[in-house]
Length: 266
Image: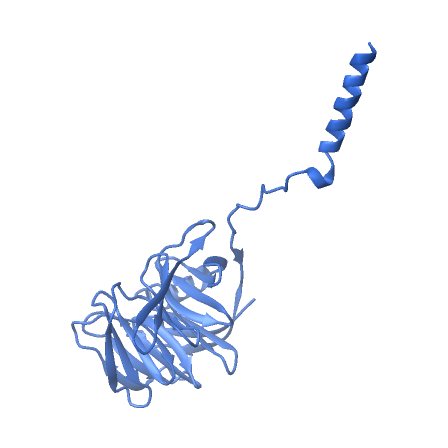
């Protein structure tokens, strides 16, 4: 009987010791769970007119002025736009064989993508004179800059980083949304360390952390999209994000939208 008690006592001591805090394996039950994007809201601060003839593919504010790239074969343009009136202050048309896409500006050079032609145009900011043409291996959708690199989307889950002077590919990241590859990443804007992107055919505005390649938050533009469709049934999807770094103002619009909105994100 004593032997049985001794064995039981030893078993009990070992069991208690194994249950100690220092010997437990770490709890990793949540470590591999995908990040679920938070929701963020927007509030309209001002409303401006927008040309319904503009099939907006890119929107950017640079040194206080707004520039817009438009699409569709035969009517693709690069524009300098007066925000209060929505009128074009300067305009050039692309050859009808090109479908214009996103634009961005870095060091007084405007970069404009083309959709399936795999060509990027570089223009002088002052007079819209074409400086260079660069080939790329993918379709062109959206483009932005982090101040050093050019960042391009092609409608997939991938973002491509290019060196501006040569358009040499530096790296590619694959963006995930709730643990799965994101899709239809379209027009881009770099704001305070994050990449904001329209999601083509959907009402979502995605906030992407480039350090982790994860969608960390989303805004739902359904309400504003419905408002636009009531005003112009021919209006297409939300597409166009611009950030004025000097004033901290953010602008959004869409393809053939009758209005441009100054918004704040909350």
